[in-house]
Length: 281
Image (cartoon, rainbow, N blue to C red):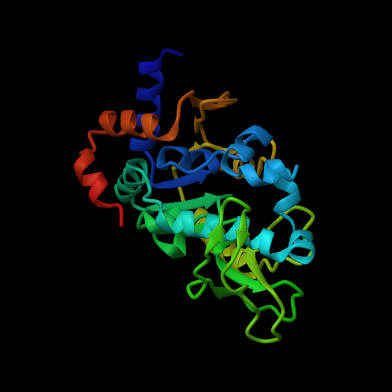
């Protein structure tokens, strides 16, 4: 399918819909300047100290790291927490909001990302599923109870030459044990899923009321295909945006990054870029 034809077909799917599912993986954040952890090369490019230690992503992003070296684990997660707080979502987020705002049932976000970028971009917090949890929320490492609380009081100071936290370690306010992000990690039997489960229940209620849904999937990988599976489960033609592995069985494949694709869709739908940018919060 020619490039222009693909954009026109995707725009037609969006123009006819009564509700928009935004299914997003890590690739959507690349245009905001967030690192791509795809493969060890991408991960170590962002975290050279962990390359020197020979630690792959799955070896630091696991509960055991908080037991064996909590300051290293919190150096990694603390840096990410500060980075996500300081990152401004790119203009594509505003375009997605503008597209959903035209629809009778609005939009809902399903994301594997833990960065909180959709909330920063002004999406309704009650209309987001953070399937793997959120770095902006904490839980007990034990865990001593089912409590999940905001990380607002955590202000990490990280020595990035060593990727180690030098400020105080966060602790559980109930039992005093070390706290950790409420994120589903690798080999994680201690993650508390209640917050994500409540989000998922709201999503299921929203999707049952749809008559003509549209689905746009952005930057979703194939190694952990949770986002792709949910997008495909809607059983409607899918708009898949991905510079790699963009093939789609039924729908439109846009083999490019999120921001270029959304900018082209905005033009096809006659969405004013300045108006969509003003939607970012």
